[in-house]
Length: 221
Image 1: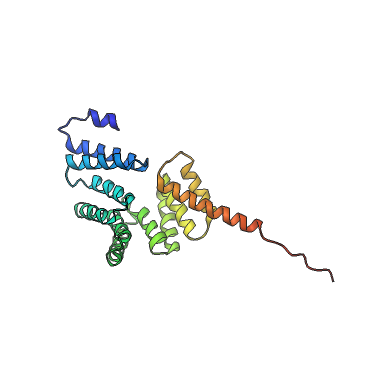
Image 2: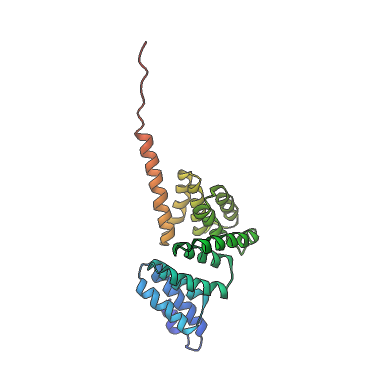
């Protein structure tokens, strides 16, 4: 990505901004917040209010626990690109910032917009699954959407969503089977790895509970 950025003419400002944003994202998931911040800011210097860079910089701010700053960035991004998935990110930022009323309003509007596009290819089903599993606490709805999306595509992110929906219903064995399919290719996405760890802990705990059950033999009459 750095080679591509360096070889892109300076006159191609949007292309350079896109590449800088990708480098920022790679540094973010690699845990280097300083570099991620620098590249995201660099992208915005090249192309002001570039919505992809705003989203990545907001993720950096969330990692830094600067939630109100993340809200401002994501609100600007949503104004520029009013997609359902961008509204979901804004709703989560509101929640992290403790702005409950704004968060609930944004989540409700997100659900409405997401359901309107759920059956088309260009959808926000991944975010809708996360909403039902993590915020609305409606695991049956999360699993319904996840199954529908899995029929359409089986990339690692969809497998992760399906696994997380299964986990939300309490089916940790099936969830572990699906999340293993996602991570066996060597994916390093922190969210997928966090889900895998959480699911594995539940599986281990369930196995330990079964192992520790004490069976009492009835006394002979």
